[in-house]
Length: 340
Figure 1 (cartoon, helix red, strand yellow):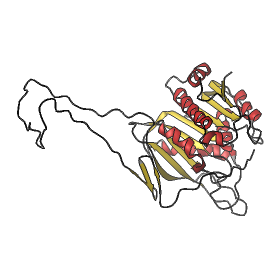
Figure 2 (figure 1 turned 90 degrees about the vertical axis):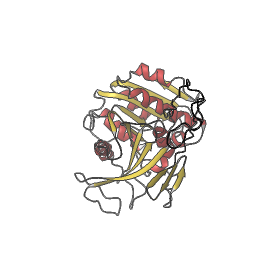
Figure 3 (figure 1 turned 180 degrees about the vertical axis):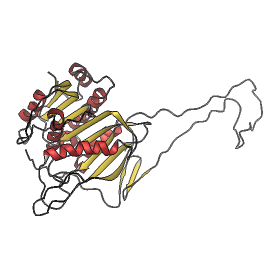
């Protein structure tokens, strides 16, 4: 299914944009961190540059106590970076009057949380048809602020920011997600935890994720969590479908989806055979705004996706019952959580 999604967000201005704690200018992120440190004197007075006791030993028996910075916790500040990944082994098809090209160039938006140390869990995101990652900033930032390294490629087939007419290309875009994982595991944008990898996508991107989760021809054993947001099983792509896959699946869909995706997204959930799966049906939810909007419902949907990632990427994984337990009660009464 190829739906037309209007780009509701302006592209970043070339001069840069300001975000909480982060300034992004011309592709360079400048992070300003202000730390307030309280130094207790412990009765010994103020210490000089040499570390000596300025007031002497007035209270010789008093011991000094070291101050430590608190361990950062989410939500973390987020910084942006753009990297270009090139797969020379696959080609890009024509976009209307624009000829196809050899290779696939994936300009990829990276969102990185500031504060966590060590390898980060990775979420690779697939945007919808006639769209681009900038549309989904609020959703991607929610994941990054929760501690996830987020990578969102601009698909050379279906993006609305490239010359020519967008085209649907589910199989190649599913393979693009795996290629991004491969490209980032080497640490190009920072260390990645290879045991905590997720793929997510909306609309046609949710269909790309369904391919990875349900079709053995596109399965990627490195992926442990799948988020199919308003997606479907694509017509014209040969099966089999529903072959057992490791990992956990979340399917989300609104009852008022403009493209009638409620039964199709539910079919993705019903077809999946995996260790844990959960379906979120959003009463009154539409196709796009319930993920990226500013309403309490949209904020609650984003929070549920974070809770799913946190539970699904635990070392032992998560069963369907554990996922439901982690997601209930949802932050908005319109969200119905169910499982098999």
